[in-house]
Image 1 (cartoon, rainbow, N blue to C red):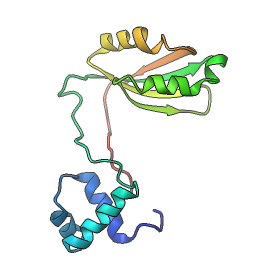
Image 2 (tube, one colour; image 1 turned 135 degrees about the vertical axis):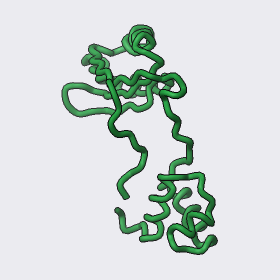
Image 3 (cartoon, one colour; image 1 turned 45 degrees about the horizontal axis):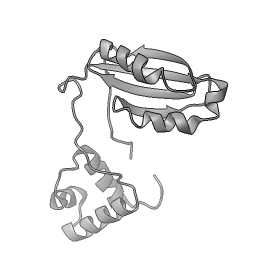
Image 4 (spheres, rainbow, N blue to C red; image 1 turned 60 degrees about the vertical axis):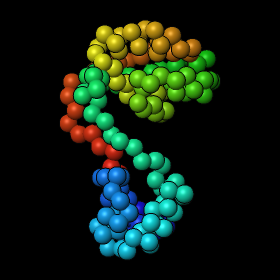
Length: 154
C-alpha cells in the first residue's frame, strides 16, 4: 500500500469496499475515528481518485444475464495499428463489462455477459466480429463462478 495512505485511510477503504452505503458515522465508528475527521478523509480519498465511484453491485443472474463469456480478440496487422479504434468501439457495447489490452498472442481480453448463449452468438456475429481489424476471436464460456469480488487487497 502506498505510504500516501495512513492506517485510518486504509481501514476506511476496506470498509467502503464492503459497504459503501454506510453513513460516515458508521464508518468512523468502525475505523476508530470521530465523524468529522472521517468525513474529511473520505472526501480527500474521493477528490484524489482513490475512490472512483460508489455503486450497487448487482446479481447478474437475478436480472437475467445468465451467460458469461471471456473473449480473446486478436487483431490483424492493420488492426493493431488502430488499437484505439477497437478500444473506442468496445466502449459502446453494454454487454462488455471489462476489456483489457494484453501482451502475448492475443490483443484483448473481454468479459461479456448476455442472457444466454444465443444472445452471445448474436453479439458475436452482429457486433464483435464485425469490428474493423478483427482477425480472430476465441470465446471461452464460463460454466460457473467460484469467486467474484470488487474488493482490492488493501
